[in-house]
Image (cartoon, rainbow, N blue to C red; front, side):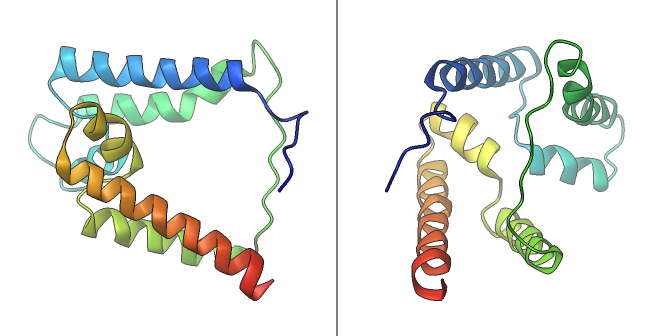
Length: 143
């Protein structure tokens, strides 16, 4: 295994993680809600009464933030080493996994673990383990 030292950005990564943690903490403190993206989107699709404005604002913020970022720095290059079919299957599997796991990586991994939720610990271990196994199979067994 080699490390891409040009792409190794520990300070930017630390700052990004701290900002995500701070945003999740502020969201739960000020709104009493967990910043889990699948739950926010799922709640919007279920159309609860009087509960959609903050969900729409949150999701619009996720979409708008790269547009704001581009005013300060160029967007990083994106390289996807998978075909369209693989991306569709992966997206469907992630969607199914978030339903079975009662949440996504942001809900369980960021918010749940910070609240010491046993359910989130199990869910995070499961999706991280599945990711490790998938990468191993794709890179080393399938080639």
